[in-house]
Length: 481
Image 1: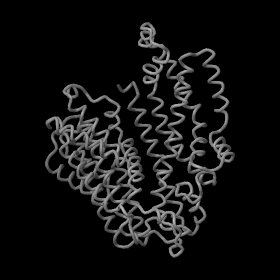
Image 2: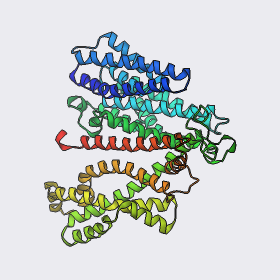
Image 3: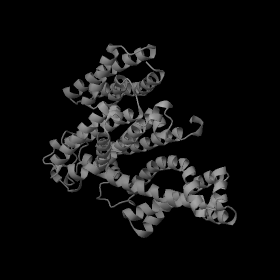
Image 4: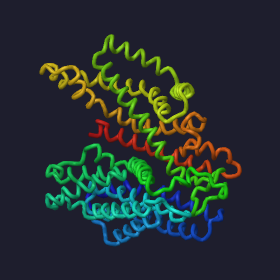
């Protein structure tokens, strides 16, 4: 066994092992002290078996120095079967073990399949409802076809370099087409396959940002959850009926969690699970736009300020210092209170407060980049200031900005939810995570699950962006190049 492969396997399994142990303990406690029936006991037993197999396999790999014996691969297939009960942690470990050559595209393919499976499982939960959306069957068939194609890429994708040119083009086109459902892993797999098919890729150690990101299991898990929410936000337009999330149903007020209503119903009889799923659209949309706008505006101001310096620098930075002195949430509350509660006003309010942080970050990086030799060479060649800023300054000062943006999206989601919780976000009837949490907070003593589930969704999303931000920071660190 190569040292690189063994390191990849142990890294993945070491990350998954404590999560599986904690998950098994939680399920055991729920089975003992809860009243969930035989189904949970069976699920807990299967999870316990998979966790035991995972621990045994990890211990054997830590001692193994040569090639993997067949018995170890047999145990790995048991872990892969864990995906049938929704256990993504055993699946990722098992899929990593069974492959002789672990490439960047293969690792992203694993999570590409995981995202597909979980979206299908969430979509199929609608079968327990009184009726389904008009295009439910069509969407399930489409998702199943995409999953079948992604499984093909996972199993046979590493033979991509041996495909004929039409075959390679067809595979790339289909991967890009699957992006329409929101699975961004397909793009990463397409990039990885193309790069790995080039002969020079085999002559060096993987060192790009995408390669290094696969070394961080937490970052991959965070990215997988983010992509899962993106996919469910897109596919839910056709697979989920909005009536369960919006229309009041006074015959089903404050129902406990069940197969029909996985997260229960609120005080208007609306399905909380459907509201959380549909609310992901707004939380993502507002959080993304309120991060992208200051990213570009603040980045441009910081680049101009750092490039020209002197009076231009003083004017821009002093104006931004005034804006920076106002707490972002207070500024957002003021803007929303003045112009009214709507999604455009909410995006504007959150965007303005984020501009100074991006401008400061970009300015600091530009002050370093502007002194590099290739910038002086551009001056000598007679390029204009705008071309130098656009072609040389900004592209080489973007890494810190990207890392900050990945973390700030999570912060923006919290801000959106906070404003909605205070009644200053989107309209109260709109299914948005802050609104759902605000409604659930009124029933913490009698029906705590109404606040727990949307709260967990917010926590997981913010953690995912933080994990991804940490991974991008490590991947773009010059010391690791």
